Image (cartoon, helix red, strand yellow):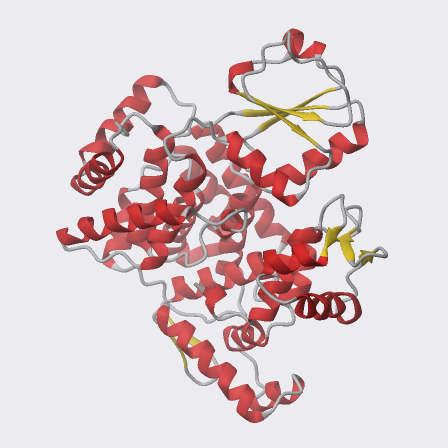
Length: 472
């Protein structure tokens, strides 16, 4: 949702960085087609990145460009450098973190006209209205929970200085997650872990708007009925009882809400079959779930009740619809590729029929569901990737590139000789093998059900192909 308010030239610059972070030089006409702009605009954007933001973009003689993969700054850092130029985000940060200076002083600091400054403020207020928040006395006010989520998102996604980083709180937050992982037998991704820590940091940050935590009835019911492990409750009490003091009860509910947001592993947990069966049975008996799955099955002519990846997506979708707190959920996932327009239209029609039952699902939630289903709709997810190349450096770079797009639950292994595969590789049928084109391998006599021949390291377009084949 917030991306609709960001400056288009900055969003284009972020996409340009994505395209240029590879091993090969990319022609300006290719960049122009991908960015849907003229070559002149591309040249201007490259000049802006190089000369204004000091991003090291290399160019050869034929107007082809790339960003050195071994640059000291990773993609996230480069994107944060671009987002730091956004007047919209700067103004949002100004209103989020209380300050004694007046807004006119902020306008002067940004060296912009007064009319432009108040136009930016108008956009900020329009965005906040969508979150049921408002600006009063140069400060964002409203539901404190929403303000905390907004602060955490701006910090995590855009690198804004909206939260004070407290190593003690981060350590204690991770302690809580370690206990939860052990109990549920799951592994939270780096992104999930980071966001949970950011949310708990907001509870201890005195810079933010201070007010009583008010849980809307629907959210309160969802939080109280959420099946959390005993180890989670014990870990929260052990680590935060003293810090939260008299506010422990409400802050504990907020920590449960934070866990609900990041825990997308409901049907991915390696729990006992008996426990998983019981959980699935309860979930499928919910009338909302039953109606929604029935519509999907009638539309796509397939039994989905036994598909755990599908049930996970539906669970997350229903949770987001209920909580409506996380306007940027899955943004890391969304940047990988655009969803299939035909699939999107089908899902949109399903949700419209579903809304007949008195529900009103926003467009953003339909988009998120579609993006989550697009890569592996009616397909089985592979669990591992094996890289095969005699060049260990290229293998290492390739692994780093691919991991940037995938959760930490994907298992990686590396072989320098394809003959080793049959001897050492586990669960070949669940593995995607990526074979370096530069090496000559004889693959006719070896059974590899899923493999791709690629140049190492792969380009962005190759990453998309890998992701497509990962969900077989």
